[in-house]
Structure formats: structure tokens, C-alpha cells
Image 1: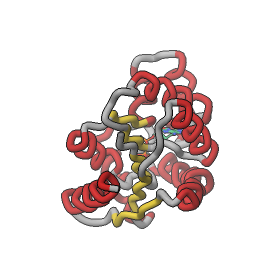
Image 2: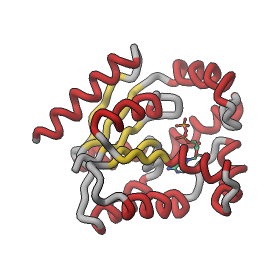
Image 3: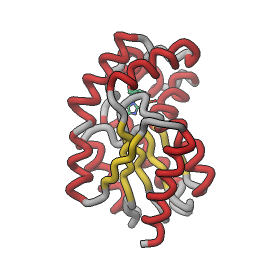
Image 4: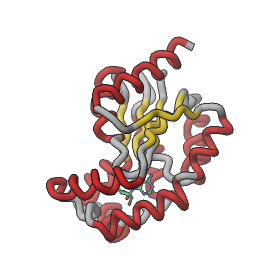
Length: 192
Ligand code: ADP
């Protein structure tokens, strides 16, 4: 099994790259952002609970996202692998993910971290906001997402660095070039 975490700040291109990666490697794609947006659209209990937090750019509680992820991992144990996007976003989520992986005798093979400077990200997200229809793609929420990222999500990098799983990827450039770099890393890892 090939289990990959695609890591990066808001707007780094995780969603775009994931679409191609999941196809190429036949991975079960788990984007907590997408799953939470589906819950909101369907107006489920979870959806109602997270709506305000998400629109303001805050992080949803670790318990909610971890229980969603655990359910999806349990349901897809026979898949070729998992591609995690936007999860884990706190050190606590990373620790709990290790617990889930252990429970199902799985392991994370690599954490690929898309690196993009903050000025570029903010511009990309403002552009995206013109068409995305996302309540959190406005300047105030975007700023808050970066505060949350810097405070709570960045420390996750050190967590995986310690495990020896972290690989930085230059996320500035053409989509297809970044995709090629990601594939190159994944191919190296799967040969190990
Ligand atoms: P981005 O484009 O900012 O990377 P995502 O689609 O991954 O956005 O997530 C959108 C929002 O959903 C986040 O700002 C946060 O409110 C919530 N969210 C997604 N994943 C998580 C997570 N793992 N932990 C907490 N909140 C999350």
C-alpha cells in the first residue's frame, strides 16, 4: 500500500495535484476540506456544526476530522493506498492519525510538502475566490487561515521531519512540472 500525505499551506495547489495523483496511483482520496464541504451542502449534523468556523477560516475540532478520517480508512482498507489532503492539520491530528494507521496495520510512506511563498498564495486565493463560491475565499477569512496555518499546522512539519518522512517540493511553477516532481518522489518511495 502507498499512503501519502500531501501537505502545504492554504492555496498551495494540493487539491489540483491530488486530482491527478489519485488517478495515476489509484489512491483513495481523503480531503477533509472536501468532505466537510459535502457535509455542509447536505446540511448534516456535522455540516451544521462546522459551517461558521469554516466560513471564518478557523480549524474544525480535531475530534470531528479524526473521526471522519478513521471511518474512511476503516471502510477502504483494501484500497491501493490513501492520499490525505488537508489532513493532518495539527500535531494532535498527526498523532491520532498514527494511532489509526497502527490500528489497521498501515503506515504513512511519505509526507510531500508543497512549498509556496505566502504572497503568491494570497493572490492565488483571491483570484480563486472570484469563481470558487467558497465562503472562506474572502480576504478576512484568508488571513485567518494563514494565522491558523502558521500557529497550528506548520508544527506538523517538524513532527514528520522527526519520523524521517518529510520531503519538500517546490510548489511554484507550472502545474504539470510540479506534478512531475511529485510523481518522481512517489516512484522513488514505492521502489524502496
Ligand atoms: P485550503 O484551501 O485552505 O487548504 P481546505 O479545503 O483544505 O482548504 O479546508 C477548508 C477548511 O475546512 C479549513 O479552513 C478548515 O476550516 C476546515 N478543515 C479542513 N481540514 C481540516 C482539518 N484537518 N482540521 C481542521 N479543520 C479542517
